[in-house]
Amino acid sequence: MTAHGDRSPRPRFALRRATGRDREAILNVMRPWNMHHVPSPEMESIDLDCFFVAEVDGRIVGASGYKVLAPGQGKTTLLGVLPEYSSAGIGAALQEARLEAMAQLGVRTVTTNADRPQTIDWYKTRFGYHEVGRLPKIHSFGHPDIDHWTTLELDLDRYRSRARAQ
Image (cartoon, rainbow, N blue to C red; front, top):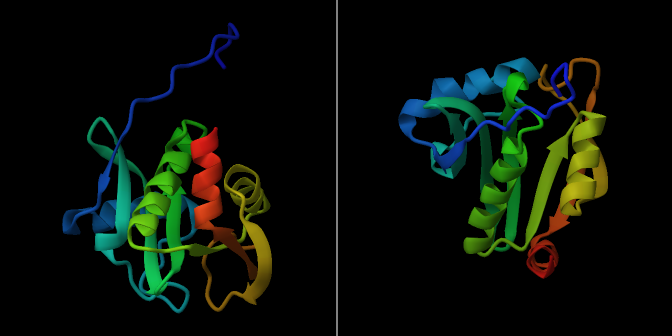
């Protein structure tokens, strides 16, 4: 909101598949969230073939990744948006893009690990994930004051059916 109570316009952004040239920009997007330590014990590598980026005026301001673990099983990897672009719908658009990509590859169940309570709540309320466990962190990654990951799971078929009905 501006000083006069007017709502600032959301920035126009474009989503696209990442390329090899985007690696450093993706890690820079993850830096404010302490998720840029790649390679590390928490994140050995990033597969740019399984990444999306969001651009505003040609600048990468958000990124999200995924991987297929086994037939029908997928996992999200990194998701981040530069703080100055939060609340612009970029994170949700990146999440939708990677869920759709996994669905096209036959994924039916998606696992996600998150550490920030507001992020966990976002996954649950916006997308329908449910909590299935916790994992201890093995490296400084994500929120520095939280020592574990909350593991969440999504029934992708159910989510897509619900999204189509809305």
